[in-house]
Length: 129
Image (cartoon, rainbow, N blue to C red; front, side, top):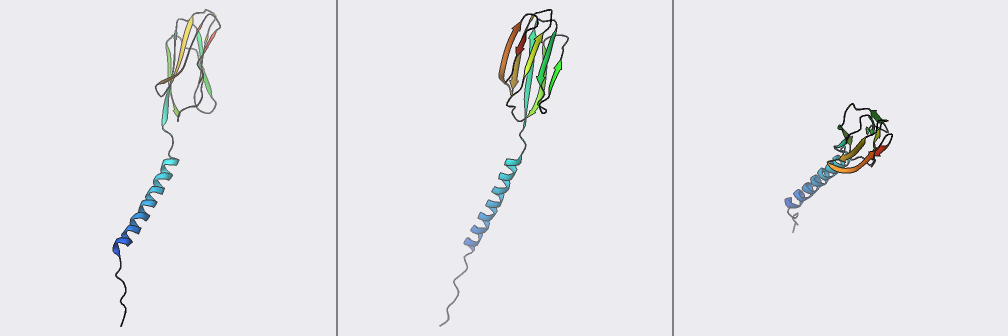
């Protein structure tokens, strides 16, 4: 008597192929997700007040660079894009010799991170975060 081979199971074969494809696709998705750059985050600096002369110093989020401006009039506003959400930054407003008052505010991704005020000649409002 001859023994016949058991019938091949095509369902098991397709199950192994499907599981293998799912693992490969999952691994590729994980690699793409972990290596994707962080989306840019909008940082908004805003300065208002009555001071006639001010100096504004702020972080640019390009390395450790800061920039300084002396706006002719207030209010003053600057919008920057940072790569990912910045952990720290600075906005300093220094009032000139003529005095007055100022207010500064920093928003990161639409949320207020810091605000401050200053009054009087040669004083500063510091909005660091």
